[in-house]
Image (cartoon, each protein chain N blue to C red):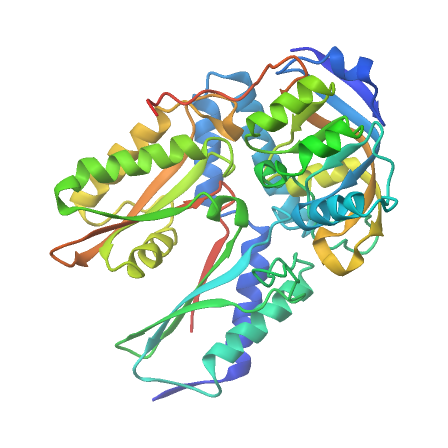
Length: 278
Length: 181
């Protein structure tokens, strides 16, 4: 067994939280730069330029990229040869709280009905998977509320198939319009169960923008959806242009013979993801 | 595109000349409020209580800033999505609020209130909170401190870059999606 100390996990998670909030991933910056060069609309070019300037400023100043530093979401893979000293849920939650405090990140977690702020951004949203091996992999996403609010899930009938999926996704992005801070990245979960489809959609958003889907069939579906969403003409911040979406990421699993679960998890252009393997 | 320098509080004549697509560089005093603060403001109006700031001519910025680093008045401070304030906005416009700043679509009721009460809805660039915070030169909490990031803050802004999304004449700048709803 490989023993991993609580302190090591804590420090690694604090580092993830700080870096995710401040550093826009290089491939997202590249995608925005390419989009700016390809845009014909002046307002679109102007906005995409501001986003690049904002990313540079956040990196230099330590200010978060966006004031909505999100809820702390974690996808954790624990190898079966790993022994953790302490309770992994508590360690991650505590590190998330410490990271948000240290980085002067906004505390955005509240009681759903009284709306009373928990004042420390807790609790972290953590998904665990047990895998073979001696590694502990932690992926962190700082997920903002504006784009999350535009996300949807539905149970299609098997007869609706791929055409039904496309219709739902493109309609969703058309309805969302300027609200989720386009250009967006769209995570899609197809299959599984009612609860699994959204988890797949969110997990799909961790795949880097520059990484093509290893399954050629899914890669083709992603491209088709990306083209259709960009044909909507919503553009950066909804002001028109050909850059409505920077990428579509699909994760698919078998489902019940009666079902076709579908989830669309919308990510704004400020894709704050970071991962570490211990 | 036409660009105007304006100072808040704003007047009807400032608002009336603005058209969707115009750029405004706003200076002066503005107030932050999100969902929870709007609810409390409207509760105070219901109870005939004095509000924490003057509504006449006011500009309300839909923002919950991140904490201020040492030596700066505020952390990152970009707009939040506006539709969540649609329930409250027409009432505030009817009482003298001239403008709101946010991102995303407004309801038909808000757009109607802008026409009836000579108001305007400005868009700021969402997700550019670090950049936009550079235009804020002072910030202080003036109400609802217990709401944390959702407290009402009085901000002093200098040349804050805004785009007129909905004007007081029924104009709108958002692109209509190529989609048959």
